[in-house]
Length: 447
Ligand code: GAL
Figure 1 (cartoon, helix red, strand yellow):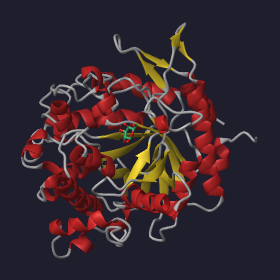
Figure 2 (cartoon, protein in one colour; figure 1 turned 90 degrees about the vertical axis):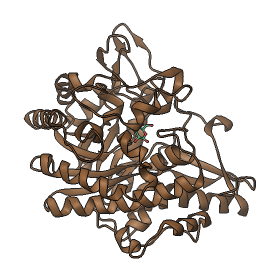
Figure 3 (cartoon, protein in one colour; figure 1 turned 60 degrees about the horizontal axis):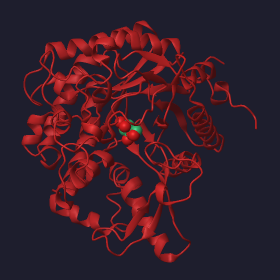
Figure 4 (tube, helix red, strand yellow; figure 1 turned 135 degrees about the horizontal axis):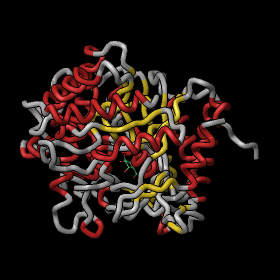
């Protein structure tokens, strides 16, 4: 097989690494930061693997100058990170924290000084807790709260940040946080979920409009989780089940954004969103993004299942199947999935540009003699990057690839068990050690 080179992607392709505030920053209650739904959720019994929390996480809040040095050392030109809403506006609305703004100013300035381009996600799941007390994403008022926060960020950071992402994976934070209750804020039920979906859809478009108005030259995008979905067996029932799961996981958020409405024809339950829809919402859900961020980790196989009240389908987990390789998350390693997703999203004529804003893998690493030789992660990256190139060569307008993630960090409900980083973090000392995958990426990026 031909070895893939950075040059195969062309000069203008953006290579990067992605992180998220809550997963790395720590400093959960210093310098006036307000409580977020994740700060509260991790304190509940039984919610997080072995009671882990992110009060300290990777201490990125204090160690970011060294971590930026590591990014530079690895030749990574772009760093995607998120802003913590409750660090900037502690109560969610109202007073802006000077210290919160200062922190992100230092992070941005230092990045630019090292020639690292900041790509900023406005919302990566850490909603201010005060807003949760008002219903959080189930309350339509969130469109106004969020727009205000977006305008504060545009005002303070827009002179230097050129690439913005409005939301991180709305399907995950609404599904896991408001339907299954396994992520913060731990709400359950179809009603909460559908309300959250609709308000996130509206906030996403409104956030885009606020940004564009305040920063007409900025590149504005948003990011979606997605997985190639296939029927488990070649039967009509499984095929139909797969169509529904595909509509849920891959189409629910992008189609209203593009003016197509929710994919109700293929997923009936979404019709119940109507109860939350007001006049003119169809138009308000739309926004012409400069790019769409695709985040892909695996594929899903789906079986017909008549017992699920909302969707006659069941995802057959990798642990129930005979898959050659799976990750610590129990996700099948299936590089073609990223290719299929690029083709799928590129098929919408309104989508201008695609960027892989996350892709990566958690494997059980071994730290030995001061090294982590994570060859599985290296192969994972090579195979996925090859699939991105395959799509690009077939004409897909893909302009970037960001690996998830820089550091072994707090992986939400799974705590610190899964390690996704290019850099190992000692959980006692927080000492950083670049893994083989980090060196591989460095070498790939320097040719
Ligand atoms: C994404 C998420 C990240 C990270 C990653 C790995 O869904 O945006 O925060 O956790 O998955 O599971």
